[in-house]
Image (cartoon, rainbow, N blue to C red; front, side):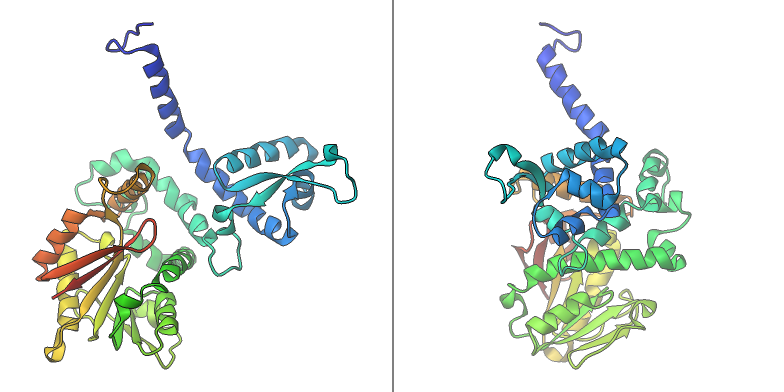
Length: 362
């Protein structure tokens, strides 16, 4: 059947409609995820010790009977998207297979939302989906016509990090989110012996609450690690024999060490600013005639090599960083930065599904 749109087949138009509606209603995916955290459903299932039936779940949640069907529909959708698994519960006291009930089990994704565990990303969900942050994205049109302002400069009246400094509660939420994400990176770093081999000292620039530094020193006890961040960030951090903290400005100077770690730092900044940061890092690792290295943990966009889903996530993160005047870089863009900052060589290796680890040498 012919169509009135550029001679396209009706089947093609219907496919276009499916794609359009999928993205049109994609915000519901985020809101369903937020719903599971707010109702503490991952922890309820975890504490239950086995897959939980709908009736057991709504009983614990004290949901009105009129909303039980809605809970079932939300759980069915979340299961379809991989956050829960629908299994069959069998009553051990009854051999009748008809007594089996559907029940919800955790998947890898929802296990990452169980609060109180070592690997929990619930703080990330709570921070990103706070209306203060997520609501800003309604102003993309206005932002794109502002010459210098970030998206949050448009909606909040200041740069995002200035907003954090002036809002202690949200700053706490943000730091908890970053710490939870660091645990995922730390899981990968445990297998990166070659990256830290031969080093005696390392500076974690923008090291925040010291989560990564402490992990590195636990894994590599011979290393001395300095957590370097804004003075107000590190002033209350506890120190150990291997971990110390220094407050300062990475655009002015970076503490001397064999290596400098930049985890999730450079994607926040323009090329011009990144070159300044890298130059300060180069000075820090090139003292006393010795030459160390800079270790970068960040996204590397590689559409030719990555599968469609991974590329989609990286490009989505790039749009997110654009709203902060940051950027997720391609392989070629990273190389260009390193050359302009005066580095001679580099090595890019996979770290997590989304992140790479880059070692650059002066």
